Image 1 (cartoon, rainbow, N blue to C red):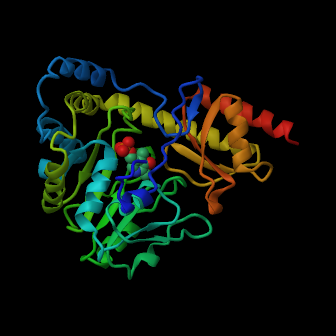
Image 2: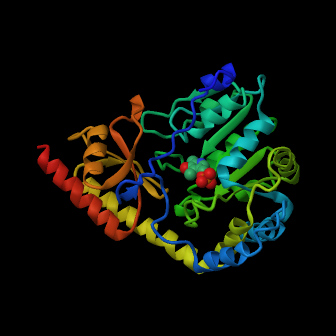
Length: 354
Ligand SMILES: *Cc1c(COP(=O)(O)O)cnc(C)c1O
């Protein structure tokens, strides 16, 4: 740290991404990436776009935005494309929170919300999940400020039915609600269908998980035109060229390849059911995940111990260590082969620790 760093930044605790090890080839089940390569169309379009890298990209990403809007069944003026969905989430904190407008989100959820609040000097309250890890939406009823809900939630994978979310959104039309749908393609139901009804709703999504494009950094926000204008204002005040040429082209390629996308989502859902059943057979308790990960705990071994032993055996999973979830691991759903390797290593570890 240099002696010039401000007090505020000194205190900032950055988000800690899952490990991306370089020293050894692991079976990576720790950051919810897809086990499948991106669509061939995405790869081809990106490489064609690379030939024009001397030119700035279109700051409006107009072609990609139009394609995305078509996919979502909304208009281009309802959509903003961003550098990962992390960027649109940060834009939402920048647009809709300040010292007097706090943020509210669950105590167990995506770790970045807290960081966005802190870096933007926004007070925040973390609202406890119920004992069964479900979100108690009623607890948000009298909270004035920005409400951020990941649906399905991370790292629990638990999904809230749209009807219940709509009640939350409708209960106070003078409060902005952000629904982070990073995992919605694996069995949830999108709140995008509500954006024309509520001008206090922003839905965010990403190409990182279901579209196998974590390395491209592409996300989006969907809302009424006024909300999109707000977010565009922040974008043009920070980084107008937030989506690079290759990524925009890859995004269009991915959206043009519906069949491949559907097939991969279906496979993940099947592999999730398979691995969940196998884990339960080994005595694990699991949440009802609608995401591309499984949240699981065994009373035969601590979360930390199992995480370390799996790592020794070449399998990386995510261990958080927070008090309420210290027995749990978040395990990304990978290919059938990866799930078989995971289950057989866990069976061995449980046998060894008997
Ligand atoms: C992965 C994830 C994101 C962000 O993904 P990007 O790669 O920035 O698009 C946002 N929210 C949740 C809950 C996530 O798990």
